[in-house]
Length: 366
Image (tube, rainbow, N blue to C red; front, top):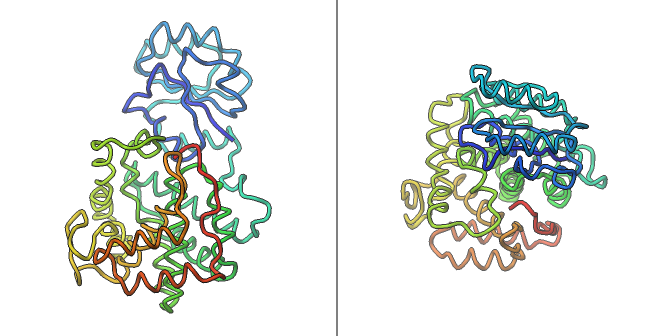
């Protein structure tokens, strides 16, 4: 399933359409390039009229038959007479006010596309793993909405997701979970789901109590909340980031602090995982340069899982590292990481029963 986003040039910075790839597989198509070839098998078209030129609209009118057979949602401001007239001059799109809450826009697109996040999960994945994946993905979608509109984080869904993910990991191991999460279109979501699973398994390997293991899964789901503030043009960039773009990505821990500080519903230890998972024991990390005992065992565990997952994930701009190579790179980080904990993590990963945790090919979307 895919949706096409249609705009005259790059999507305007204040367009809510920019957020839709957090929720659906999506491609941006320029108004002047709309055709049966570029639209392909898309189920829905979302048209942004903000700043549309007459030349762009003329080209779109000529190519309207390319999208006439699928639902077309057209975003306008009814207060803007020019946009109202532009929309009326097109085919028969469904008009959506640009200031419609993002949650409503997402629900509308989902209903038109009949989209199920788990539709791409292989048939070989057990039903309860599929359901845990669906619930975890739903939580991350809610988290993205919360980051946008300031609504409360769905703690009940977070806890249910953590419980189901941990249960399926304990029963089946990591391999079916990886098969499920690699079907997600978003690299950001895949990473959070992978870290959540890895952190829960590692906590169990360390014989932490059940509540502690569930909390690590929950922390993995929420640890990158700050990335919800980073433009998708940077998060999903297919090439190497520039220094300026890297600096923006590195702000995600600070963004996480800003977003979580007023959220009294989020447990304190989970907040610390989101804010501190890039801190290093030698004080060279960020955002606060914490050292040694200032970094809790839970954060140390999250940091190890986060780094390992990042190294073993395939992206459009890099190959995945085999587990042994990733572990060797982490050992070479020396005193930045908890060496005793890293040794135990290596023992877990290299156990034959742990399974192949990096089987998926490189994704096309980063």
